[in-house]
Length: 391
Ligand code: GAL
Image (cartoon, rainbow, N blue to C red; front, side):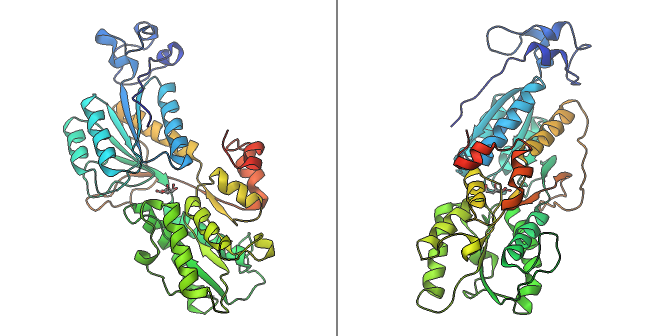
């Protein structure tokens, strides 16, 4: 777990302060960097940017590490101090970390919740202390005290996942036109963690897209497990997905003539568990040789390599650099005494209120656009794609 990190604002960044909290005209008192590693003393402390707490769910998935690092770097560029914590996917740990951040005097909180409903008392304390809360990627539920939400268009991510499955099966072409295949095809469907609000959005987007193909018999789910509750994988665990895939194969396919043609997977970690289960049950080779079409999400490097090798079919690229940027911009707007700019004020009802949101767009990654979308954009290097590990 990463320790608390205090950052003394760099002189260049300090001069650029435009925060409302800043006491003076900017230059002058704020360009003196403290030398003891702590915040600037005396009345100018606030002008040094203030402390922002960043609570991320886990370091077991590289995306959250990248998110945490990018948010931290963006805040530090603006001269803020950052307390970045990862909670090992443990709800009490995350609650304690946020309590501690409030005790430490954070001026704003950026939170990617493990369980969207578990942070009520922390958020009450934050509100009482006048601390704005930005919900990061995952919506915090059942609380009045969520001020802003930065995320991707999560329903559309689900649409893209299902679309890529249809492309892999040959029912659609990448340009959206009808493909040559006719089916029928056997698929199985997976969902994310039931305590993550995003999981339902991904699921609804995907199932709405697949529904007409299921209705006319082009797609069948031989296990008949088509309810969210049956498909959901708690905490997005790879091993749980692997186990469920093995159970599905054993209960429905092994010893019959049935073959599985595709698997809807909403996250690369799950996809890799699903692929392992398929491989240990006799499926081999690449999609071009008939290996089942498996989708994904996050463009994790291990999965990008599998896509490059033709084993996993697709993933959804959500550029964490852009998300981090939005979170930093929103936080900075609050701390400057304003309101962040929302581009959606209707979709994300957290049970108590509709949280103003900024939604970003995502892209489907196939083998043939890895170079353009992931390498040319600097998200992964060609070497990382080749090796399957982040440098
Ligand atoms: C979701 C997130 C996905 C994926 C998943 C598992 O909340 O939106 O991109 O990262 O968690 O970590």
